Length: 375
View 1 (cartoon, rainbow, N blue to C red):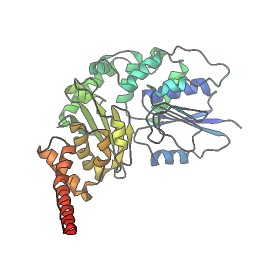
View 2 (view 1 turned 90 degrees about the vertical axis):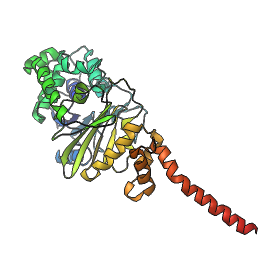
View 3 (view 1 turned 90 degrees about the horizontal axis):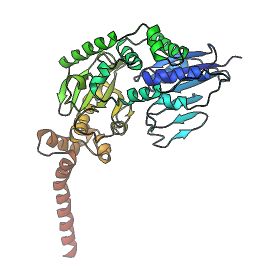
View 4 (view 1 turned 180 degrees about the vertical axis):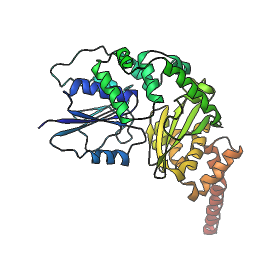
């Protein structure tokens, strides 16, 4: 009975290259199926997709690359911080997890080859994958002007309308050319014109940016309706960007990112901060970038919390308090009001001021009771 590899991968450069490496080094012939997956397809959507695969436990191998894990997986490779696992690296036959790795592709490349004969290829391209996935560009302008093959491919993937067939063909083409990305983009009929298109699309976002202190908010109809980092390209002084995208069924996907080219350093671990907000359906990410899935009814609540977190730069130890339901916490409501009106500079001082009269009143009552007891 032929073994079939079902490969689930994140539909960005890191996920696509990860899938290509896995096919090239571990899959023989056409014994595979590819499942490109968007960031908003976590949790229930991922579970539904895997259920619909109708996997045979003895024959089928489920591989998940650069995406959240599922209990059915035979191999999971990821570098995104998982709050349940923590910072420690895990490496065994079923899990390769390292939040310290700059890309998932680098982790997939580290797996010993299973095929007896695998064509050798230079792995210098992993440096570019790392750069793209970590957004470690020298300037924001590099994103819109760098015409190296992988950057052209990145621009194309970002601008084309998402399609499973397209993502899968790119994966197969990369593997077929043995990671010769110049040949890959030639066969995909891509060139520098995609960069010109990218810049034109980025300019459109200026009409829709709402600035709230340190960050901008943009509502978009679909994921990456505008090129990533457009906010920072158009308004370099913007420190953080927030994008809100409806995903259906009364839910939205929110992306939050730090402007790495800002003159002001980022002191907030965005991924960890999001993972501590209890009302989010899912939330997490890296130090400088994160994402969340939430109900539409909680969007204003998250924007209020982000206004406190991103503008006031709350320390992480205050995050649990930030995640309190303000509708049932009058102290939190009053404290936030003080911050918004400027009466207090930060949420910690505001909370202390709200609690001070209550503590003094409590002390007076205790002193009064003590006096009666002594008399």
